[in-house]
Length: 578
Image (tube, rainbow, N blue to C red):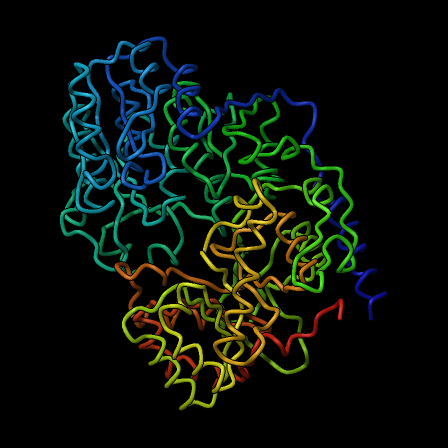
């Protein structure tokens, strides 16, 4: 069995090398700073020798400012970043260099506090705040500011952060962007009389909302990468600005430079460009390529490919445990592996309701094979799906209700629990164990593991290992080897460490927008999204904080089983290395 798995990996690797041709012999430049604030300063320096106006947004909560690039282009203003309670020295120096007189603050006081406003006013700047109660209202207020400066004929409308940011080159200095809450769209947006183009597929803005908005056009692709490519079609492309598809703040701050350079914006993973992006770059051979962000965002090998071997590796080679539980770690080995993190993503099948499996890039499949990681189960001859729940914290009595439904339906599921959840709801953890569910590790503190492992391998391990002893003391049972990385975040380094420790990292082949308790899908939307993407081997990711998930669960289980699937726990999936 091991020989078969090894040959399969080699075949996949050979196919990857053949299909993912490196991009070489191109004019490539990188714009980056020591952090996102300084990257924004570097972009501003390249964009403007002077400007009387600047736009300031929170560097970590920039979602409130997504619609601001059109305004920045109209005002010929750079977009700079700040912390919530203070502007750093580099940004202050840039404001002074530009000769700025007026500053727009994007977002409410929870995003940029009154302290920031007072600081800037005390330094002689005229400060105007544009902020609403949420991202949707803020984007509408940005639109209201835009129409004071230009005549508007068209709107772009998005519900998704990535789609919104990727649309900035198409918007230029003429077209506002408005964000809509897919479940509770603003009547004010619906009533606007302009031509409306929706950005994103029906999973973001379904046909019912499309019609309610009065939209006349949709721009979307099969994933975020193809959507960005489609948004770029027909635009001048003297330069291609490449940004990390998971860390989009660089796309936000670069929007004014992209506009001034007559460039386009494309998306990439941190280590290698995705197929749609690669094909667009190859179709634009004369364009200069600008990598926006540091090597953590886009590695030096992102275009050319990293010369690395990805053959399967045995466990227990670089980490061993002593009798007292302490670890011997070959840190040099792990530091030699790529530490650049990315969030999990996959391609849904293009044809829904047909049981077609989702796909990922072949190089990612090779990497997951190497470290014995799961995201979708192989076919076993019996149509099977795997129901998994992420338990970051208990919301209301949702978990108790879900356990009641699972017990009533005689279904076993997999629950990934955090240290916070175990501390908050030990009785629910005990109940899960007693009722025969599989319990997995979702980390102690729910941090992005790739970021932790960039600075300390020991700290990364300590965000998982203590949960094992804690669970054993609580339940008298051993915590399973299955773990789910918070946010789906991973790097080659984190996968290698987890593999050495005996864990099986688990991603997913279905997930949807169910984690935001203030923006829940409707019952009908949830059922439709899950059932239409159902396929043999699917690992379903659902969040227990979702009231919608609680409501649909009895019906969902019935529909899954009526469609001919059985529901199993992850330990029923055969692993190639065992």
